Image (cartoon, rainbow, N blue to C red):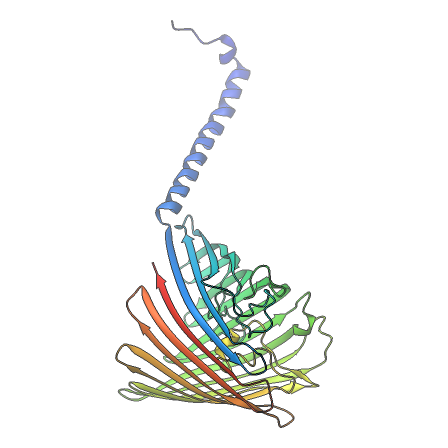
Length: 412
């Protein structure tokens, strides 16, 4: 039976309450709908990727009784949401498992009678961040993320190792004018390659990384960078570095191209570093490409001052000064690396060979030389195979070392 509304409802207080509550109810309904729509957009636009990377690494190192053999599988799953109001989320989880025993020193298993293969077994959140796109050319990200600056000589992810180096950071990437790219990151924790439980698992502190790149003309780029590293528990690695880098490409004729890469930087002690030093960095590489062969010759110098060398602890170090990894930490006398690189392609197989000659920057020591080789075959968009070899012949630094890798990757 119909009931007439009470007089109280139509009284002034009742009308006032109704006037106040109606917009709130409507607003809550609209907000709820907006949240629902946002979640739907995020889910509808989401993508997921799975990558499997199996690798066998063999190491024979003079001075260590037994050889190392590491059979490892890295499984990587990531999910990226669709954009909602310019925002998106990204989460990536890695797992490294051993297929067979750990007949190698993984830096935390205590197997000191065998050489190091720095691939601990673990499960870890490799990346987890929120990104915001102001527009197509300007963006910001906050959280655990991959940061690779230019050639990764000063800041990179060490993607070769099964545990990638990622950064807990706030990053801003801008393009204020055409051809000019600005990249600034404030980093409060570096998640290193040694796994979440390793003794050297992270660097904590206050690090500022800045890179500005300007495209002078087609094939010509000039960059300037600054890296201010302040580590809480590794003060001896705290430093400030400022430098410039030029990359140029010159087409002589159709099919023949010359390339040049020049860089110079200055590094000094910073914050709580107990040392007092100022050391330079110099790099030059000249290349000639005439299909299908590319030849490059280069010279890289990391100076030493007061017994303290120029160091790049956040770099993708495996990429530089030989794949045998004998110079991950620059020796006290600095280093000069003179190298020759030859690359070609035979059918679908890419081939690259290096020869390195290593000397001290000060003191006249002849460290040794190294030969490196890579053969890579991309089967299709999902599968690839790689073989890699390094042979370091020691003179006055470290010991003779041979390394070989076989790697198979699958992406879905």
